[in-house]
Image (cartoon, rainbow, N blue to C red):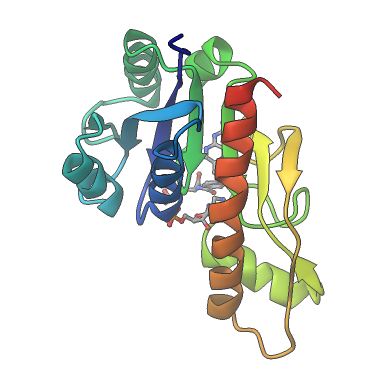
Length: 198
Ligand SMILES: Nc1nc2c(c(=O)[nH]1)N[C@@H](CN(C=O)c1ccc(C(=O)N[C@@H](CCC(=O)O)C(=O)O)cc1)CN2
Ligand SMILES: NCC(=O)N[C@@H]1O[C@H](COP(=O)([O-])[O-])[C@@H](O)[C@H]1O
């Protein structure tokens, strides 16, 4: 019996290590999902290069390809629906997902954020800024969160979190590396659970 696989689209801006981790997890027999489409707002992103190398359909969609965020939103939604995407994952995607896509994929767009939401989220909270904020706050624990994507940055219901320690000699870079390694475990676990219907 052929079991339908969940088609997953990943939106990425830069390195794409979470995208790679998700793709690798999808190749495990019985994963239940396939990374079927990649979108980046950065034509030079390593994520798009990886997608091309692995034969994953991909597209550069940004303010350079489309004049308005509204048009970008409509084009992205068209691509997702034409490809039968069942779940959208933003992973290191630095732009806001627009209202059309949010409405059509309500409950089916998730994001990985590098802190224990609701702490250290929101506008401006991306990349190293998040880890710098954690260190500045004196938090003894941090870690990634996977949450539903809603209109405002990082305010959607949290699906899962993974705590990692903040060590006394941590720098933002050492903390980022520890959190990123936890993301590479957490995000594929959450997507596999969604694919199973858990
Ligand atoms: N509608 C939504 N879109 C996105 C969400 C979300 O929760 N709702 N999450 C982000 C990912 N993210 C944190 O996990 C995030 C990304 C970027 C920013 C941010 O402040 N961006 C800057 C622009 C940065 C740039 O252009 O490089 C900004 O908007 O001023 C905050 C949080 C993915 N999309
Ligand atoms: N608020 C958004 C944000 O900061 N996202 C973070 O960007 C990094 C992307 O790495 P990757 O491109 O190697 O997956 C990840 O740490 C992700 O949590």
